[in-house]
Length: 114
Image (cartoon, rainbow, N blue to C red; front, side, top):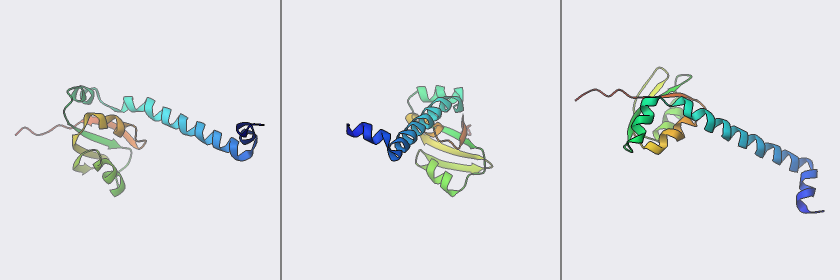
């Protein structure tokens, strides 16, 4: 018997296969739901290729962990209620933020006129 067949016949081998399939399904789910979290105004701003300012809404008040995670993508401008405002977010990072499972929506951040 080949090594692969022996591995698939063992409990450990089947467990690994199931875990890999579940991980792939989870990644597919995150990819499919990410697009629905991004507001059309943010999509338009991303298409310009310049950094964007966004409001990231969570399903709960963000804690320090969530704020620090989002800070990896841009500057945290404010945190209020269930929302974290980010500035200078790279256009490619918006999709990465949307793939985070605890992010509910991403809207354009209304900046005050100077």
